[in-house]
Length: 253
Image (cartoon, rainbow, N blue to C red; front, side):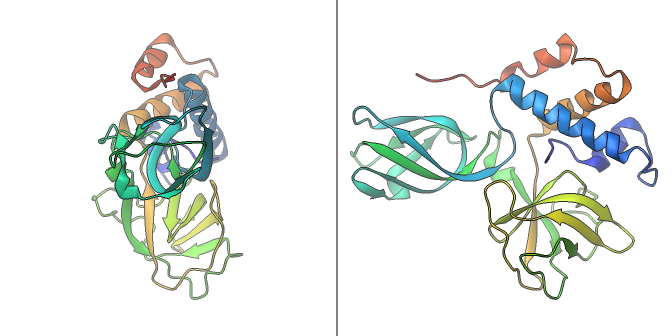
């Protein structure tokens, strides 16, 4: 499972050297459990999924409440056919959308199909960051699960390191991949291909790699949550649940 925080971040949070990998499986399990529990408590996803979603309307509307959080919209159509993205405004404009508004005087009608990337993020423009790295595998086919890069431990485009870590999501072209393991000595990543609604594909040598960066406040909560699971195995305390209050989904009817 992809996680709201990476393995290297949990190492740092716990004060465990990155070279001490004995507990990595337990740490990954704790990160995955924390992510599942946080998303379940909040009633929404905080990690990207590419999908076409359908919503059926009983009558035409010019404002469409969305049944999930929309990070980016790539296409939309309804009973009347395709709708130009220039005719639609996402609301709110500064975070994942909860509503779509027609700006051309038209309406949404019948079954509406929305294709895009779905998850909640406080700043969609900052959700993906360039790793400042690229595919260095000479023939990175759709079946390959080992990816060569330039520098596993280097800084990304925002100056954060390591640029790659286990439990994170990366993007090459339109494919999303899950990083299972990193090898800093060999500068390789072990990856799961075509995850979260995407399809595995071949990628050219030197194709750029982006990394998904979850909302930083949620990342910090996930680290605290995972640490508690590791250290006590007990449910999250009230303080952590209270910290999630701003992130719970309010269903619009």
